[in-house]
Length: 393
Length: 107
Image (cartoon, rainbow over all chains, first blue to last red; front, side, top):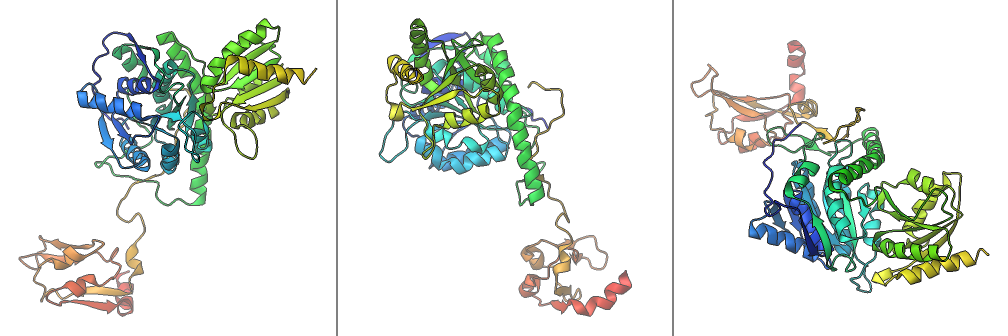
């Protein structure tokens, strides 16, 4: 069914402009320009700036969203689920414990097929209390069906939020999205971010017209009442199908974004210095990957045949793409911020499962680095890979 | 929104409420409320208190100038709240077994 809409206002973007803003502000500007209709928020460091900026926009009258102030992150999730079910475009931002407190509602949004989009500032979990970067908060929700993007800079955060609305609200997907960035490294570092004009954004993002269901008092439906196993199974397999389909849709949306705005951050994966026969592949994510781009240049100068794959989308996992990139690789080096205690890094686990289904099984080296926002410098990362390769001699 | 060629549809749990979607719950009844229409003052207390709600006042019924109280026995579960609340005490709860013969005749 189609809901006719009066889009909420978003004032002040007649012309494209470049602002020097943080990752949090980039997320706030993206939500504003995507004409989000409902924002529910509860502040938590280091994502507070994003929801504060949104509150400022609404207070200043330049953003027409309904801003719901709630008493906890769990209520944020509940408010967004309710609002999204009525057909509204919804947005919030949170971190670490806030996201885990919201976890029940994140699963609810995913399994109820509600395209809520959230900006997540990845932060370490307590104890001990820490406020610096680490991706376990969002990665612990890996299996909920929610689409997860990991961004390398503030520009990508802005662009990905616009794309996330397109993907999440696609009639074949209807799944929520997390757009993740590293605490402080991105969330509090001011960098130039290019904002297109409002018209360009409107043309790209469009409106949310739910076709699967919408809560409407004039046409009452009960959503998700008790379901027997046979129906439950059917709906869950539908989610499997949708999330697999989302891969192609993400690729299409990224390509369309590139065509319209001239920026491309990779689709499911982002590669750097990779050609068809790269022997040594570094797999990383988030802002670490941007630093490792320099490592790749350094290693290439030393004569190593290396390349970088940045996993941009963790779920749905780009298995075919990863097999294609690694098809002639001899070694694969994981440098990631996300351990799965008792095994290896989360990205390593998923990537190796994907490669198992292919013909080429490169030797893997695992590095958990940058915990609690520890600096992973280009020299350090290059050193890790060099040491790995020395063990082969 | 871009549309792709195949007819894949996102499947969700939606049920639309309508009368009788849970079956005829009147079958659960052990006692049937029977109104003595002679004594009934049409005060509508039973209409107000019925939790289902299956009791209505039919204003157009020709048998009385104030109309007639109607109980929808297809969905009345026989809780007895109407009989308990009736100020005239004119609703009697009668065992369903008393009506077995009547029901057979109706069919």
